[in-house]
Amino acid sequence: VSDAVEMGQIDRNPAKGFRTPRGKPVKRAAVLSGEQIAVVLSKLGEPLRTAVRLSGVMGMRQSELAGLRACDLDFPGKAINVRQSRYRGHTSETKTEGSTRVLPMPATTEGPLHMLAETCPNPEGLLFCTLAGRPLNFDNVTRDVFRPLADSAEIPRFTWRSFRRSVSTQMHRSGVPL
Image 1: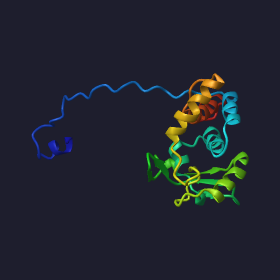
Image 2: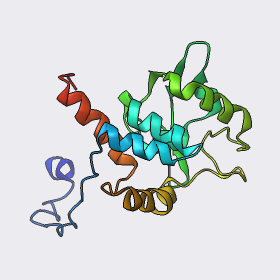
Image 3: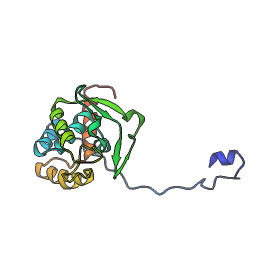
Image 4: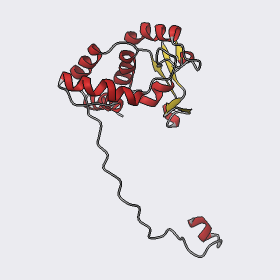
């Protein structure tokens, strides 16, 4: 709108002085210790264990996990190509240009990823899906799996974002430049 004012197309900015209402405060995702993540992993089955490993070790976003396909896995090169994301049922490019990247495939995930790539019945080739082939709803996992798990293990309630925050916190504490 300011460009239109500068170009003389309108006399003044009609939104000048308008204040947006304050949003509700955002609660930061919990940061889990390595021991707490190990507890979470010990209580999960596949494919969630592999998804948590990728998020908790590689720092992959929930949307990147949701968009990960069999064709994104390079087993000979032991690499994971992050090329797309999936959020609320819509597949698109990754969140940022830098998010499109190649990650080393952790040894602990190679076997499970191979199994998922061979057995997932999803027509889009998505790795993390239900037995019926529908894309896994990661928000439902947070509500139906993570919350009860956290409560029973007596650790802070966590979300998918917690794993990414935990990785970056540990890296920062170890002196890795971020």
